[in-house]
Amino acid sequence: MQDIVRPINKCRVCGHNDWLDVVSFGSTPLAGNLLGKEDAPGGETLFPLDVVVCRKCWLMTLRHVIEPDVLFGHYRYVASDAGSIIQHMRQLVELCIGWIGLTDGDLVVEFGSNTGAHLQLFQQAGMRVLGVDPARNLADIANGRGVETIPAGFITEVGQEIASGHGPARLVYGRQCFAHIHDIHEVLNGVSALLAPDGLFFVEVPYLVELLANNQFDTIFHEHLSYFSLGSLCRLFESHGLRVVDVHTADVHGGSIVVFAAPTTAGYEVRPAVAEMLAEERSQGIAEEGTYRKFAERTERVRAQIRELVCGVVAEGKSVAGYGAPTKGSALLAACGLGHQEIRFCSDTTALKQGKILPGSRIPIWSPEQAGDHVPDYYLLLAWNYAPEIISKEKSFLENGGRFIVPIPEPRVISAESAL
Ligand code: TMP
Ligand code: ZN
Image (tube, rainbow, N blue to C red):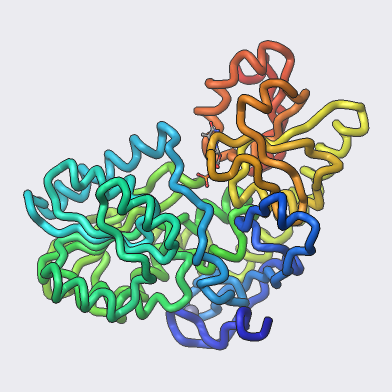
């Protein structure tokens, strides 16, 4: 156990060791580590889940780091094929191509490339692509669909080897994975080794300001080590000779930021959006301890309210199931003390998840078809980040008297009348 979990001894952005405790969820199982039927009788290993914020650079982070191979060696997170995500990926491809004028044959490298769905879009646009992902099971899927993928973590040597084997990359990017990596300096050294002098480095991360503003405590789980603001990313990148040149917001995963950086020597003009967002962060109190204390208070309140609402409905004799089985859903159920007693099953469209069991709460995951034979009175919308898409898709559930419980920012019930 000592080898696979350890407390951090310095901030991974600024190197200081001066922390404010934000919130603790006690010891919980790995929320994304879905169990097979054969694993179900054993007890899951519990890991501490404590959140702290650095008083020097305001990076919010977990206090403990788990050995990456335990988390990612066989990864069950498969990039969603929800319509809104596909549309978002298409927009990002256009944005990147336009920003630096990518042309046929330019090399695009993605780390944390999952099953290669995003790289395939660059491939279709004429670029050479290469994926890097530590999950061997996902790298196999990507290679199988013709997206060459190295099964490895993106460390300095990997960046160097790609540069010597394939030449410099005009675009290096990581979507929704940078916050999962403890040694981000290894990644940034790899980026520096690989990036062309006029190349662009792109990351998409969940946005700390949205997490705080919308009480997204369920997005805090062991895989999510860092919770970034633009300010902390600027500071981090600067220490590696990279300047943030543009930023966009993206309405995915509860609110994310898409950040473009380039070698300081490339001389790209810094777009006004960067200074605007930094100013907005300051006015939102990102650098004030009180902001984090208030978030912790709201988290405690909302956790209790969700539990009360679900238990109240169950006590009335109504049935409740989970809609979606995202990792954050598993984290939410653990944080609210909800289990199989209250939630009969979770319905999820992802084939890899169906037939598995959520760790801790021990709730079975069913396909939507199986769920269709046991329609509950209430669906707890664990995949709340797709709320508009799901609610419009499930019109007939609502019209037949079904209700959704949307857990955050504040728990609320949606019926056919209120969805109009
Ligand atoms: P994500 O937020 O990590 O992408 O996870 C969302 C989960 O919700 C994913 O496992 C797929 C599932 N889901 C459904 O089951 N039905 C849906 O309509 C949508 C949009 C997602
Ligand atoms: Zn710091």
